[in-house]
Amino acid sequence: MRFVRPFQGLDPFEITALVYNPLTENSPLKLRDTLPAEELLEVSMMQFIRQFLVDVQAQQPLKLTQKGNLSRKFIHQMYDHRFFPSEHVDSGFSKLLQELDFSPLHIGHVISKFAGLVRKYNNKLSVTKKGVRALEDASVLYREILLVHTSKFNWSYMSYDPDDVVQLGWAYILHAFIKHGDKERNASFYAEKYLELFPEMLEQFPQNQYFPPERRFANCFQLRFFSKFCNFFGLADYRVEKDEKGFQKNLFVKKKPLADKVFVIG
Image: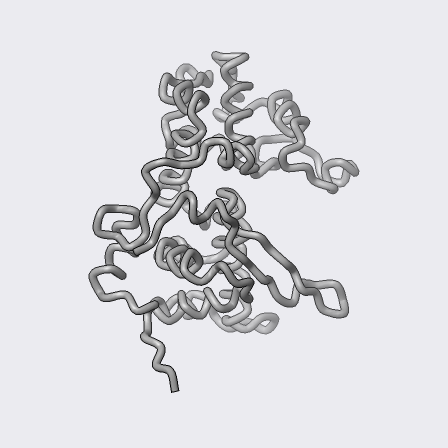
């Protein structure tokens, strides 16, 4: 019988680095020194944030609402670029009345501020010198928004699931995905590896009459790591298996070639 070492065969120092100091010199997961700029420009979230910066720059200083949010006119302008179309919005079922109604834009706005790509002054928004440099170099922009998304942006924002789940230890799971992602696997394969290191995370989902903790955790894991993080940064391909009622039964994931061009393990 083949013996499988726990925790991906990593030693305690490597695990600690992945969890608390990801992408640093001592971490077994690192960003490559040179990133493929042309391929990065094909990533949807990259295209969207670049367009956001371009549109702000064209109108700067861009006047915000009294609450410091983007105006309805600007929201519709960004939606009309069609990077993240919605059938509910297109059909008129949902209205884009405020920034929070278009979550990709709201998240892009927040991340751009955290990264120092835009600056608010006197309730007006402008692109910073750093933002201009990022517009000129896709690898700079990708690196900046990746670091902000993983270290400053709260993944539980705009959700009802508990804090820390998945974001704490994201690099540990990404290490596993880079290592095993050449083969299509059920997303549960990675969820189980996460719970091997953080079994207490299951306790964050109390039993209720509708869904067991295991299912609620699995949904949270898939949404935060694959549907959002990996999707935002162009790291994974997906295949959904549905049940007889048309609901998602399983999510199968496979690493995109870009993942190995952005990250290196070892």
